[in-house]
Picture 1 (cartoon, rainbow, N blue to C red):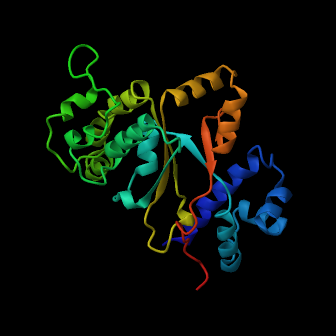
Picture 2: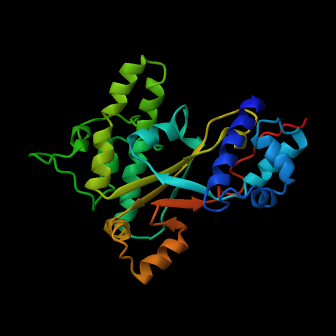
Picture 3: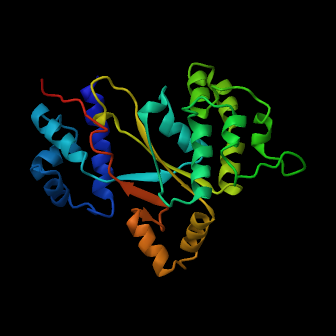
Length: 269
């Protein structure tokens, strides 16, 4: 547990927050929001080490801030999940619509990423009654190769862990082969992934890496994103976006972590 690195990461993120839309460079406003004296914040941002008591208070305050969940493609998903060896360290959420077609797509994405129940593709496929996988022809599904597989321990996270100690070029080549799955999940099945990697200063004393992801799926979600691009959202769509804390202009979510999910290590003994 290295508090020098943790303070460095905190300084980086506070600098980004200061330059963001909420504060627009107003250091006093940010200091008030954080509950610290402006000079203390200024000295810290300029490289000074923060005293243990102030650091611990500030970290607890950071837990109340909303976090930005960005849409993840293959590369950004790797950055969010890298060095996470167990799916229990990834908080999973989804947009609650209670539509069967959406739930099935959440199940598909969750199986692909984590396969927490250790199911083969054939087993999970029986639960996906509204998800079509083309098994022949020019538009054959990339999942077709898994239909005859009996592998119960297959997941993207598992492969990410296996590749962690390999030669960098071999690792890049193996992980690059997963791009086709991310493409099909978005373009064919309308499954979208958003995520956030928990910063070091919010981790517990064991320094176990953690992340949080959000699943969104369905034709309606695809339509919403397209309407947002053309600035043609209906009033109903705008209320829906506000209700789930989704910014259609930025294609991001802003959410707080679940209460009790994170217990940051304290610097003060």
